[in-house]
Image (cartoon, rainbow, N blue to C red; front, side, top):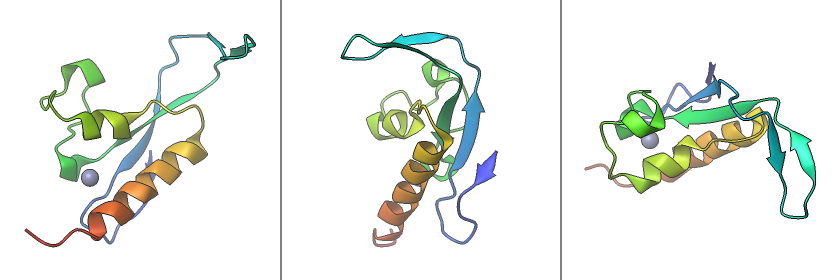
Length: 93
Ligand SMILES: [Zn+2]
């Protein structure tokens, strides 16, 4: 697991998922192997790390969107960082 930020209120975790699908077809018809899949979990948003289908907060499309999955760790980290930046701009409630 990779901690993206330790100092803000939202502290998403980038986690490598089990690869279930070994090949993926691209829009142009290419078939490429899937070697890694990553997801982003934000506990501060209420994500407890369960599989996406078993989330306690099924009515949170934003959480599901943040989860991914992403094909590359860099993309997942970028999404996590964008989430942190987005949340830190919100006023305190
Ligand atoms: Zn969050």
